Length: 493
Image 1 (cartoon, rainbow, N blue to C red):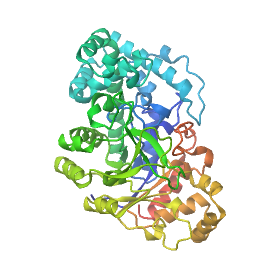
Image 2: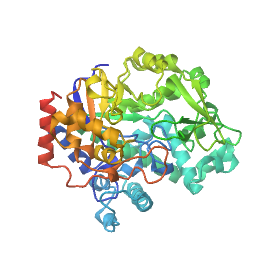
Image 3: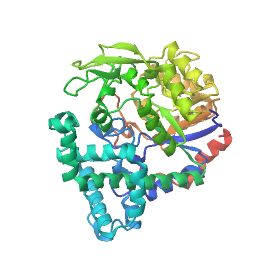
């Protein structure tokens, strides 16, 4: 895969400004694409786009394929005649810089249900909707059914449903479908609208020559349609709960490791199926984005497996992953694979060998570089050309937040390394990153704005208070755009 020398910004859609409590696929997203274009960027990286579940995390989604209906734009629903001005007369006073999911979700769901009722009454876009349902039926039928049952069970995890529904007994499923066809159709409608709005935004980005980098989590949430509909593909107990869980051993982020709680794949059964579920999953995201950050790439070479009952990730074992046969199958199906390997953490030679065998660029994180090692592999002057480098990712502090919280030894090393730039800290790190040989470089938007620790997106191994940061509506302007454009031009990006 060839990546031209370029730059991009990492910012999830939820972080866009706007008056509806959460960033969405509406006018501010188009304004954002314009800003990227005018600032000389060629890439926009987002987080996973699935419907969020536990902890409001995009990495704990109810589906590996469906879209997040909370990202649907009320403004675009209004334009399409699926909402009317009276439907938007009572908007809560949402905070500008933080998402309050507790107040957002019930309001947004009610608004989306109003749009669905309007759809039924007006039959607006009905033909387009029916075409979507037919085209996407391979994943949409199970997803809509799963979400409808969750709704009927007050959002309880599928392992707590009545046995007939939990175990997908034919009679119970048929009875539920017969009695809840309208709710099932509603969830299909939400997906129709999400993908309609996403595709329009993607086409606009293409017109501005902005490529989108998506994110493919290696694991799926336990409480997801993927596990409920295919329990034999996961290491589960008889009651449906995980027998083995995913995570990572103690590392930079957590002395106790990270216990993610996602169920482990039965890779032998995936291989026996020709990796058909994976092909379906990858096929959909390839339709949606230009490049794909393959989350926790090392797990495909070898993964950390933790037995159920452990409360931390300290006790576990490394197990061989699907490796070469998995990627060979995908390559035979898709041809060139547009993957960026998120090769961070405890990286062993087999991970590097697998990455290089299939020609995936790896990642470098500049914040990790200042331990005093003269040629630390994350220092910009050491980057190989075929790599994707970041000031920090969504799992890191902003540059200013990092500098405020890191030890004096690392601060002094960073200042010494960056002293030739004579710029403030975020811009010094950005310029150093931009001047590196790395083909593709990214900053978090928080770094372009010089924001501190309170703008952090995620604290790994914690489940509360994450994913809430939003950019102010006046944060992007001509002055900032000119400054960024100059950096991109000077560094030939």
